[in-house]
Image (cartoon, rainbow, N blue to C red):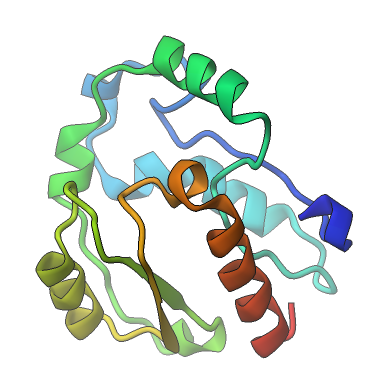
Length: 152
């Protein structure tokens, strides 16, 4: 992405990646997402953020690092997530990348998510739950497409 002129920042959500927080202490979806919200809130008004939450580094190194960082997730925060629609919710376009071979969030579950909180656009990717590993170039193409379509 950087080679294509985009500025990239990789974040770890609460109790994920390098964040040392005990996942059992992350009790809400808001708490889980706080690093992302804080980062987006810190952007200047003329900057736009397109969260991609992945890194296109050397796959072997990324796989080794991911295996070292693997630990239980903040289950309570994820199972109690609620999305409250505010008046300005549609001010920021939302896209959903549907992963067709996902064994974590099955396609029918993804459809339910799309129906419950309709995004501005839905892209389909023939990949598993982790397209940044299994289909990085296809994912990159969709992220660039979304950035161009929505003026990021």
